[in-house]
Length: 104
Image (cartoon, rainbow, N blue to C red; front, side, top):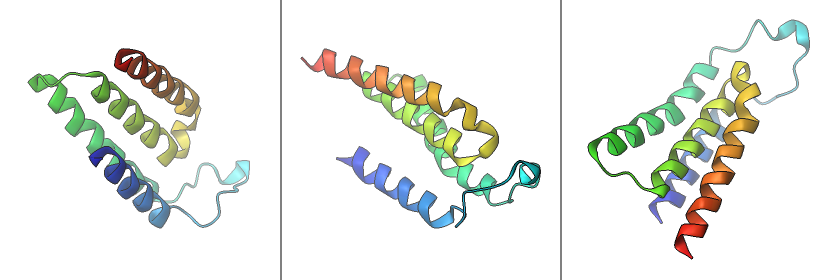
């Protein structure tokens, strides 16, 4: 249940700090808003906390799913990392399927 609550909080923060207009031209790609760094902080913080938890010894398939969700959030937050959205989403899907198979 805490996973859903934390995912909702992260999604709400991204929604609140996201730019209003997502359509940009190719000429404006170099001039990215400075707020994108703030969008990267929350998923990056979640990623670091989960990584510390795994290094302490709490490794599980849920931790891999949480890391893949955090990496997907990081790649969505910054436009220079958008090329990694699909691989991160694929990692999320594979880890969710592995967790489902392990539960059966």
